[in-house]
Length: 178
Image (cartoon, rainbow, N blue to C red):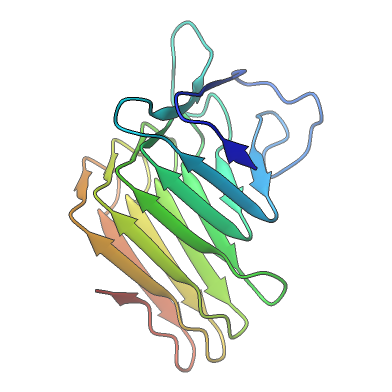
């Protein structure tokens, strides 16, 4: 899925006519493959609620099992921001740069790996704030899973829990922040 610079996606608030996903009452983006949303400083890409009075949890969020590139993109008013999930059937490699994830009811950015996967996530020049959960939550589980997270020059502010939370469970699990 390629999203052109300058695109604003207004997601219908508190509605999902398919009744699927993690939250059957809200629209969610599930990407099994790749999504490229590379805006520019002059033409950013925006994922937001179409509500006249926007609120956290108006829509679901973006969940990726594959490749994600967000550059000059804003994600706002979701149940969560972005989830990059790696397991035995798919490895997510997410790159987020010059982007904002804000005003969600959950975590701004959730990075999860299990079953001996080794994803690499690059997070550069981001603003992640005013989320009810963690700004960034990285979780590696089981076996020889190796989750690498490279965070540079970000501003992570006013989140309900910690700004950055790393958790590993099991042998050889080593989430890295470099």
